[in-house]
Image (cartoon, rainbow, N blue to C red; front, side, top):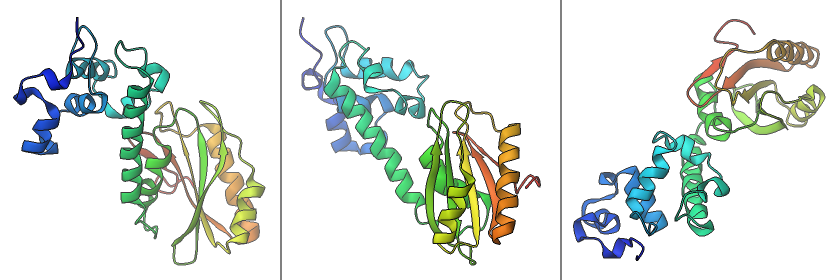
Length: 228
């Protein structure tokens, strides 16, 4: 039996032509993925295969973006090239979101920090610890990944944090890390590290302005919660 190629479908069922005639917003997620992969397998069309792939992640595009090339290739009809196309398209979407957020250059609230950092670390499967370095007008001088860890923890060298702050003549810092588990509440080690950074900053006259814990759906701000 022949593969279900998009070219063999009735005109009204072809997502590429549908996009050209009616616009991109009218297409379903499955139709967009079908355009990426081009064809299905011997048993199902590209759209049917795309629906099955999306169904495996409860139609959650964020969850789809976490699938590796190897995981996508487990679906019949998805070879390396098609898997790479899906991964690449979703990465472009993530980077576009990041471009939209890069315009935030001055921090006025914890939400501003979240807008900058969410695209970078919210959907990672491991913890990363980042620092925003600010001047006396709360403008972001630089942002830097300080450490990268495992599923539940990452080691942070406070000396490196303040070394970079001094190099930038920063007067304030905001630290952030993600919780892959999705839990927003800070752990005891999160609280201890926050206090350690705060105390070290006092000696150098560099203020710790906030510490954010970021997950896919929300964030926790030490400053907002009054525990900084």
